[in-house]
Length: 113
Image 1 (spheres, helix red, strand yellow):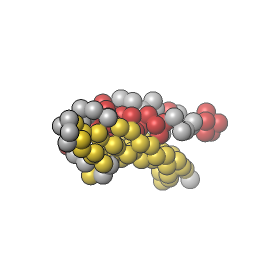
Image 2 (spheres, rainbow, N blue to C red):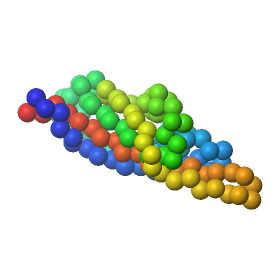
Image 3 (cartoon, rainbow, N blue to C red):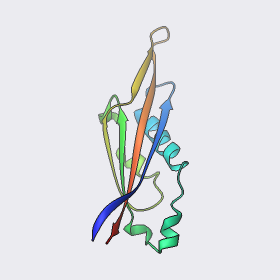
């Protein structure tokens, strides 16, 4: 069988002060998760460990995202997380602060005939 994408969900998150890319990434994933309910797992009798979940995080400094911390937020599946260049940094020069805006794409795939 071939794993086919059955869900693509997007979310955004931010860290308004402090420039924490992991915090913004986790908030983006949580935003995406709060838009979804994977009722098909129960309906189709799919084992939770058979669900394939691929997460892509977009931030300006992908090397500063703790992908293990992001992975820990996901409730089910075989999870992979990667951080790529994207998102947005908004600098506040008056107080030497930065707002980090992250985007997340969560793809769920199942082995289907």
